[in-house]
Image 1 (cartoon, rainbow over the protein chains, first blue to last red):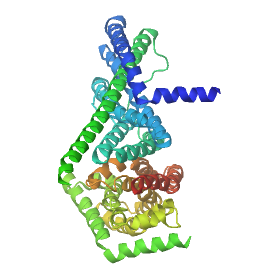
Image 2: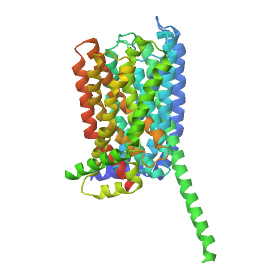
Image 3: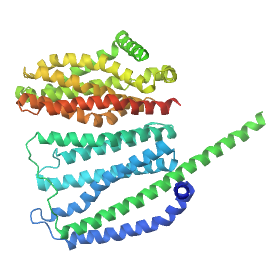
Image 4: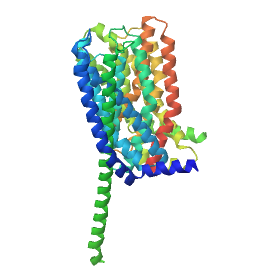
Length: 257
Length: 222
């Protein structure tokens, strides 16, 4: 009985019309919360936290860089879960979610790489070093590009969705292996790179970072809901156009027959 | 099981009779290896140092050339549909075709790698380990490549797309292949760990990649 109730609940949530109604109500709250948290987080980052005693003001880059890196992985996980849901349960909303998240995830990954290289220039003296973490994030970025490219290169949208879902599952299976191999590789080179992740991070730096991480996650949530709504509307519009074209063709054919 | 060997034999016969694909792959391999020192300048020390990595990367690129057409001809003339409805599971069909690709493309490329190593002044003690790592690592290239070939079988610009999809998947193979050679040349005792991991990657790819590739093909045959 309980199982049936939960199933009907997920079914209700997964219904595109219900999703449109629910997301319309949620979206203003997401945007508002993201804006407020961003304002608080950026204020704390720039005025409420001290400059690092070694890195000076460049440590402020961390407040964008770390949340972006965190989101780059979270969004890929979301794409993989959505793809799994789409392939197994054949639910179109899961595909909408996977499709909407790919460009956003690629953008966050690019943001992590770009801010990382801006941070790396004063810290390491180079915009790019072949540190294992940088390398695996770069490969993650290429995987995102592959997902977007594969989807856009297949004209049949239903087929494109399924094949992209297969690719994202292959990606999630191979990402740990890539990460492991890249880290293995670095063990065999002289350690020339100053590593991040000091054993303890001082609370004065940690709090702004946590707020910024939450703010950027809210921002992603708002963008994801908006992108999913746009995708659903685009699909509805496409169906309407097709129906209109078909009925127009039917009408014009009628006198001839 | 005999259907598997029949299919393997058929694909090898086609590769042998056509002959063009492997010729192109070998020619491409040669061209990349010749262009590289021209671009870097004739510094023998530098070329010797990067020779193993260069030979590996050029081999991956040459194998990639023919991977895009792994299922294309069979898909276009409908044989793939016949194979899919036959007694042999589609996973085994994929495995047979990937194995045929390895035998008909990867093996000839590995066979010419030592000769191209001469051009790059590869140190004499590196030849054996280079061939060994290539033999151990390239099954992963052919089998992971089958996933990319299956995903792009219906796309017109598949040849360009497959590189973007597959090169990230080849990263572990490349890293452990190069790590084994490096360990063997410097005489450290870390040769066996990385070499065994390289074999493990190939075996895992041979076991798992046909599942993903067959899944992708099935979606397109419906």
